[in-house]
Length: 185
Image (cartoon, rainbow, N blue to C red):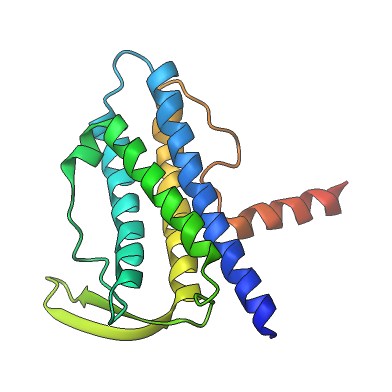
């Protein structure tokens, strides 16, 4: 693959992840405007969004470090993001701005080497360090976010907010459904 294609793909992954963050911001705004009076942000939606935001922050922070070590397990677990929709929106906006800047950095391609440090085992007793790439981590983050969007979509529906049929669906699922629908027509 040519370098220009690699950088273009990295830009596309940054943009896709930024689009997911924008969807999260829209979800928060719509919940604030449309959710029923009994909806409690911090009971269901807030914890998922805090978890998503802090995973993205782990990658952004790792790119600023010399060792470029991403540690998703060493998150701040900022309860303001979990309990206060305005704090979540602020964090999402900051991430969106970071992603726009990082997408323009020509030195950050899909094959940019990173290291991921993880805890494993039933009690987190095993610490693993694994070589990875920026492309792999951007793919992980997008998949991780969509995975969390699936239950978030249900929480929103329960609160009276419909985010659309495709919210929380993996890109592969949507592609499969389009192919299946086209074949059926």
